[in-house]
Amino acid sequence: MLQVENPIVVEMVKQPPITPEISYGSVLASALGVVGVVFIAGIIVGIVVGATIIWRKRQREAIDPVDHSHVTLHISG
Image (cartoon, rainbow, N blue to C red; front, side, top):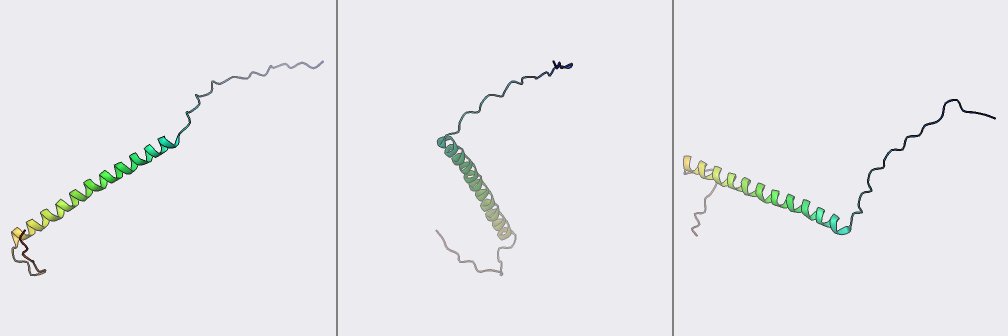
């Protein structure tokens, strides 16, 4: 008869909990959330850039009211 001198020891490691299944609704909600954040960020950046352009134009006109590089239409409204 064959005997093992050193026994084999197997350690059982606890398995992590099973992740819940992802539904189509949660994927859609996440996608709409990301799109909403990008949309709002785009609007904010557009407002900041537009305000900066208008501010710089008004500053330039205050320094040199007669700019010969372009034609002003003088539209009142």
